[in-house]
Length: 357
Image (cartoon, rainbow, N blue to C red):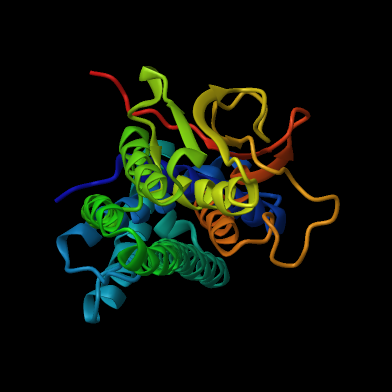
C-alpha cells in the first residue's frame, strides 16, 4: 500500500480549514455557546472522520478515475467513517471538557448538531471526490496532449523525409544517364544517410552530435550533386554534443540554404553550421538557450519574399511547426540577411543538457 504523504498533508490542511469554517458557522448561530467548545467539537469530529475515510480507502479497490473505492464500499466508507467520526469526536471532546454532551442536548439542539454534521460531511466528501476526479481528468488531458504532440512530430518527420528523398532521387535520375560513377557515389551516400535516419526517427529527440553526423551525410550527398560549388563547415562545441534536439531539425535548414542560396549562384558557396548556448537570445531572461545557426554565402534574401521563397519553404515551415509543438513560444526559427551577403537561419530553443554523473 503506497501512500502519498504530501497529498495526505494537503488533505489534512484542507480538512482543518473546513473545520474552522464549520465552527465559525456553528458559533454564529449559537453565540451564547463558547467558541472554544464549537471549535474542539468541529476539529475532533472532522479530523477523526477524515482519518478513518482517507486512510481507510486504501484497504479497498479504488476506481482509476477518482482514486475512490468502487461500488458499495465507495458509499459505505464515508457513511461509516462520518458516523464513527461523530461518535468518537464527540466522546473525545466530552472527555476533554469533562461533561457528557449526550445528556445536555435538548431535542432541538441535537437535531441542529446532527444536521450540521451531516451537511458538513456531505460537503467535505463531495469536495474530495470531485477533486480526485478533476485531478484524474487533468492527468488524462495531459497524457492525450503529449500523445497528440508526439504523433504530430512523427507526422512532420514522415513529411520531411519524402520531401528530401524526392529531390535527391530526381537528381540521381539525371546523373545515371550523364555520370554513372557520380550516380553510384550519390546512391552510396543516400543509403548511409537513410540508415542513420531510420535509427534516429524512432525517437522524438537525440543528441546534437548525432544530428551533426546525419547532417554531414546529407551535405556529402549534396556535394556529390553540386561538386566544387558546395563547401561546408560544421562547428559543434564538445560541451553541446549531448544536448537533446529533435531529429531532422537541421536538414531542412541546410536544404533551404542550398536551394535558395547556393544553387542560384553560379560559383556556389559555403555553408557554416554552428551551435552555441546563450542566456540572452532567448525569450525568457536567465534561461539557457541552444542556438543553432546555418549561414550560407549565397545570393541572400530578396527585398520582397515570394510566396514560395526561402522564408516560406516546406521544410522550413515544418521545422518551425516542430519547434512550436515541442517548446511553444520558447522555440523559433528566424531568417537573417547577412551584411556581407548570404543568409543565416537561426533556430533557438531551451537548452536541456543531461545531468553529469
